[in-house]
View 1 (spheres, rainbow, N blue to C red):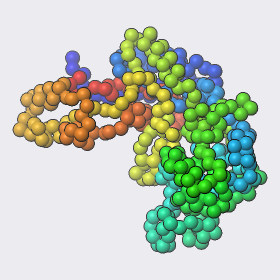
View 2 (view 1 turned 30 degrees about the horizontal axis):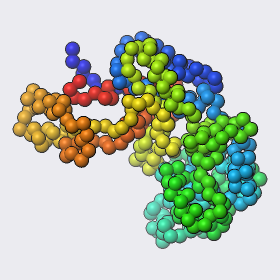
View 3 (view 1 turned 180 degrees about the horizontal axis):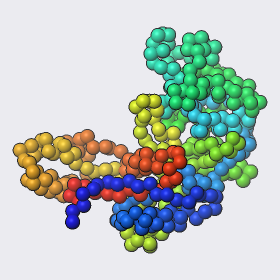
View 4 (view 1 turned 135 degrees about the vertical axis):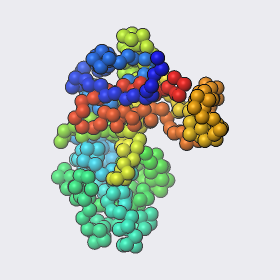
Length: 396
């Protein structure tokens, strides 16, 4: 009987994960239990995806802000440090800022404007236009910012992040000065020791700062790259991808991801006889059209995945074929012609008109975004997602 569905994404309920749990075994058992309960079969090239947060939790990959502060102090000297281009987030950055401030005497906090790297607005472009401010040229002091724009609260959280970050630094006993600029070199008028907190543009920021004569240049990916007094760490990403765990503790991006996904795949293959792909996923790579926020606050969508998830889609655009190559066909003739075209398609369609309009992104970015939307970030209780039929096409 012909299968009438394509891609299906299912959130898989699991036990609450704690440090030390055998997560690979739990994931396998939970997927099998869901299949039995809901009456679906597992197939070759299904994808089982696990959110990074439960992987890190099972590893106990946490660090107290005192460990963060000690690492910052040792790597910067602990005097005046420029902290530039952080995102505006209570969950993502505020806890990191507490640790940074605890490790230094003064923070010069430089915020990008009109928005941060992922789209959280401090002010609107219309406000800049009305004030005659050029964000690519003008460096604003806190006093000038308040004079021009007053208090600006985030539309979703209601937080004035400028005041919030200022108070966080002061509460840790450090002095704070706030400026607004979009060129990393602007911080060098205040200090030559810089911690650049941008995520996806960090390499450029570091390069420009070093070329401009900064004495010490670090990124978030250079902090907690090794244990500090027994703390968690991430040798590849440091603080990038971290989240607030408690008021005094940060959860880091998971470590040893490849070992985990390979082990999970092994359990699934042994239990089902099917070749099932496995990946860890974090933030999806998509943009909210209302809040203008780009979701990707993690350094990558997927920090680890099995080999079968390498690469990008290689797909034909059915609309293009129907409207152009087979515009004179309909019904069963059209179906047969397109099916045969798919069966005979080139192994690499890059640059071909028949693939124009398909999504030229990594498979892990696409599937990870689907999983992030499926699992949500609240109380669904589905930190594992099963994706079926993703590699199907019209002929299956």
